[in-house]
Image 1 (cartoon, rainbow, N blue to C red):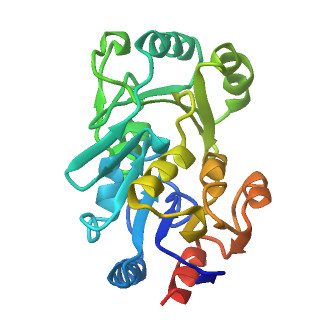
Image 2 (image 1 turned 180 degrees about the vertical axis):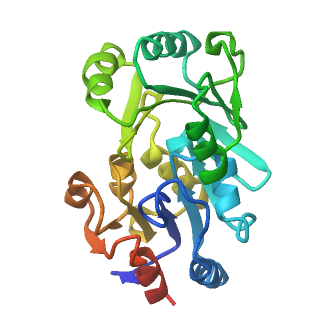
Length: 267
C-alpha cells in the first residue's frame, strides 16, 4: 500500500469487534499467516486494545514474540516478556472512582494493574467471561480500596445504564481522566491524555515511523484517537458511527474478515 512516497511500515489494530467477536479468544489462522508474511516484509505489527496484555498474548500466542502490545487502552506499552511504558492513575482518584462505583447497582468494578486485574465482583458468569472468554488474569479481592499496586486503568462494566455513569460520575473527574466507552457494556478510565492514539504516537516515535506510514483498524470510540494518528485509518463496517466519521477508509465487518482483506492487499 503506497501513499505518495510512503510505504506502510506499521499496522495497528483493535481486537474486539474489529478482529473477533467481543470477549472471544480464538484468532482465525489466516490472520497469523498474513501477519507473519507482513513481518517478513519488515512491517511492524501492534495490537491496541482495552484488553490486558496477557489477554492479547493469549489471542496472538502464535505471534506473541513478533508484535507490540498497546494494552489497557494505551496505558500499557510492551512486547513479549517486557513492559516498556505504563501510565498509572492517581491513587486518590482511583479511590473516588471505587466509592462512586460501589453506589451503583449491577455494576462490576475492575482495577487493572500491569500484570493483574482486581475486582470485588462475586458474579460467577462475569468472572467466567473474563477468565475464560477474554483469558484475562482476574483476581477477586473483597476490599478494592486496600489495593497497593499501581493501577493503570479503572473500568465499569454494566449491561445497562452506562449513561448514568457517563452523565453523573465522569463529569466530576473529567479534568483528571481520559474516559471512553468500549463496546456496549464498558466504560474505561485512564489518566488524562492516555489513550490508544497516545500509545501509537510513542511507538511511531520510537520506531521512526510517520503517520503516513501507519495503518490502523478499529470499531469503537476508544479507537478514535488512534484513527487520527494514521493516514491509513480504517473503520470496519460494524463500527460506531463516530468512528466511521473519523476514519478515512472503510472495510468489511469483523465477521466478514474486513481487516484480513486489507492486510492481504499489502502482500
